[in-house]
Amino acid sequence: METEVSAVPAASATASYRPYYVEFRGQIEVCSPLHIGAGEDLSLHSDMPILRDPESGRPFIPGSSLRGVLRSHLEHERTLLGCSKSVLESLFGHIGPKHHDDALTFMGRLTVWDALWEDKTQSETCEIRDYVTIDPETGASARGKKFDAESLLRTGARFSFRLIYEGDGEKDRELMLLHEALDALKEGRLRVGAKSGWGFGQVCLAPGSLEYRSYQRQETKGLSEFLAMRFPSPEDDGWRQESFPWQNVGEPLAEPFDPKQPSPLSFLEFDLRVQCEGPVLVKSAIPPLMEPLDEAERGELERKLKGDPDRWSEMGLREADHVFLLSSTDEKPYLPGSSLRGVLRSQALRICRSQLTGDEPLEQLFGVQKGDGTGQKGCIEIGDGVLEGEPNYVYLDHVAIDRITGAAEDKKKFSTCGLDSPAFKVKVRLSIAPHQIASAALFAFLLRDLMNPGRLWVGSGTSRGYGMVQQTAIQELHVNLVARDWDGVEGERQQGRVKKTMKASGPKGLDWDELKWLWELLDSAWQRVRLREVPA
Image (cartoon, rainbow, N blue to C red):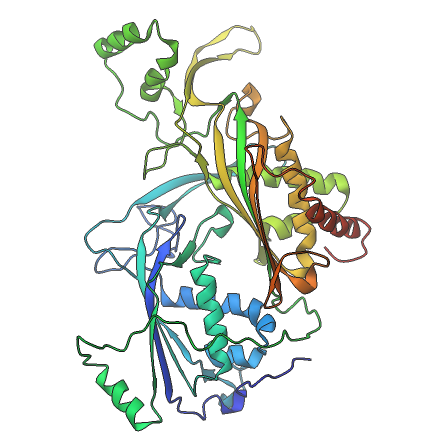
């Protein structure tokens, strides 16, 4: 049973005229590619265009999207803050069942405005990325499953946002929920929009941008200041940046586990260094990179490069049939998070089937969409791999072989220009509910395979020796666990959570002995799933 802690009962939620007014403003900074879909299926611009303001044509974050993200986060966190479900509903509102008294439906105390593009002088940087669905059985692209999607790529872009809370006073429990939501936004723990599993949608509060002003309209002075704020003086507009007065949290609520209700999430964040060996190729959709050379220019360039094989890639970037994918922001190669995610998902399927655990850990980790329209979101996020150092290209020629004659087929020559033994820095984040710890154990198996040479291959041309993952090192590990779900973990304890950060001292990364405590916990969860002692 839930314990009510200074909550506003649903029946009285509409009784108060909410004299206490608090307004927040600040700037949301984009920390990764962002995709908030426009809901168009027949756009000539892209299969999945992003949402834009119809007047200015600039992207924006709808208030409904931001509000939904805040509510989802607080639905998970409220029990650790000592807040019951009625406090959450008082903040966001509640819609009662149909054919019941209207008193069961009431408006929430929080208003969230659209977050608008801040910089009106500089155009946004958007990119249309191509994707293809991989058949897990064959490992090849599925027929008819190619699509593209538009994304905002300008990291550091800012959107101005505004929140308004109207309640009874500074002791409202709803303000404690709101304070937690702003803290999560400040620390970059929230994801906005679609494709978070591909590392999209990470946003955070721009440093020093958050301000607030509050008025107690029950008092004559407060009401006068509230009315005067519509015409603020240049000397004092009421905005403050000092610490908010609503930071106290209650004791965690002792609630029985209910799989139908959101539970507090534990977070594991890995900073990986993925080292490949040999050529690696993630095909660009529109090769070549530059204008093709005419015959005279090609002859001149060939003469210059004849005695310098290290510069042959300059020819490849211009004329290869397939070149490595480049970012439109800085024109540097990158490893798409969707590509690495697909490789790991295929390997996870093999592990689950060989271990006879069923597909539940796989579906929890990567998500699933079923034929009846139901499904669930995965708990893993894999960001784009950032190339370490300068790119070292390799230009290779290929020819198709006739299976009957064993000779080269006519007009089947092609060339590639990939990267030679690149290393990528990749961020992986797991958001784990109490009943999903087995999915984290499944990721530990995948991490083991990434660390062992030759277990996994990324990109295209793997049958020709492209894309071997030689070694993966864990450079950093950030742990933010719900204490009651993880026994015996040492670290900083705060608000029912255990926080711990580990950084590697050298390029080889953290070793298995340093992470022994984590592997033992995950292995125990995995063995329980195998023995069917607990549901996956």
